[in-house]
Length: 175
Length: 175
Image (tube, rainbow over all chains, first blue to last red; front, side, top):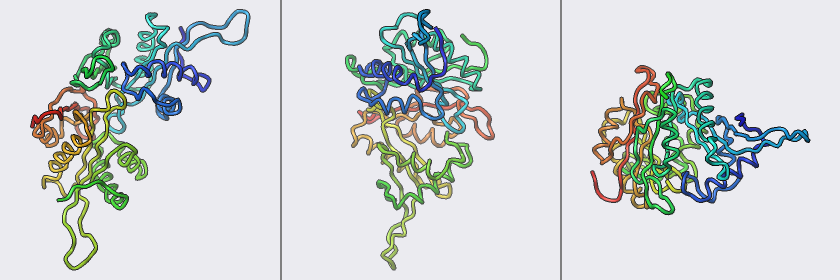
């Protein structure tokens, strides 16, 4: 797996993943009907670092890259001004590529990138309490639940569910 | 005091307050050097309800309004999609008009407006722990500290300080 900054050539693949992840409306607080333009405008916004995870490589028989984008994440300041030393990040894995450690690899890559960019901490504002695999992954990577928002997400099947705010310092290794 | 939706005629007054409040960099996570255009673009963004609090009224000797804008607040969904039933709000009072209950009056007005607009809860994402009067006001109005973000704000004099996430339901009176 290779993780690198996204380029314009990745936009179609990123939109495909974004759309597949967001359309069910059960993991992210995005409008499930968000347009391609709005989604990519958000994911590639000025001041946001956008990454893709690719599986595969050059086909021996071809000069064209056969690597496939299987995940994407963004990294940016969570707040401007006096809050800009805290990073925020969001992650998406192609539904048919789950269970291969792509989320974890992107999470580890993201922590390294955030330190490289000089961030002192990282915050996730909106982790659904029902998304057990995400909560456990972030805890594994050193994040703590620092807040619980009661009923802050309307799940299409589970009605109003709690949402976690998760946070970790980047100043020393806590993982 | 009169609180009403802001109009284009209030933009100059809103910018004056915004600039005065944000420039010291000690209460809000905005770039202290934010431009008028960016500030008003944010405060009057599509999908954001913008209000002003005015003191005074018609001068007896004149048909021109003498009311002065002494505060402003915004009300909007804190998240899109499955999170859009939770409101977010932000408040600013002109520095020379503090201590007159303008923040409290706007807070009460905001809770009423949020209920009228159908929100089920309200969340403040970034209340500085050093801003005791704000914390106490929101607690008085029924908000609870549901999360603490360690060192999430760089205060110009106090270095890195904790920030609170505050939350209250709007479904029943908790105040």
